[in-house]
Image (cartoon, rainbow, N blue to C red):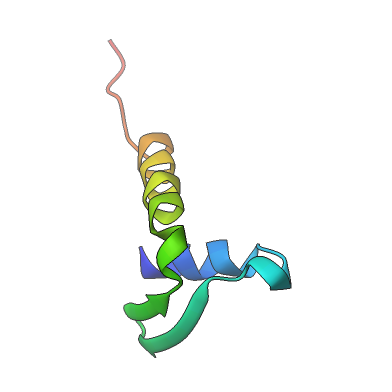
Length: 55
């Protein structure tokens, strides 16, 4: 999910970028006000990326 968040940040305009510091490839500091937005985008991604067995 870290790469998804990095790509999400990269797709934002410069004034809306939210990653403050990359600690390592899987941990980062982000602006606190974007936590809910990140969670909802991850949820949307997981919903789109789930497999449903055909009936």
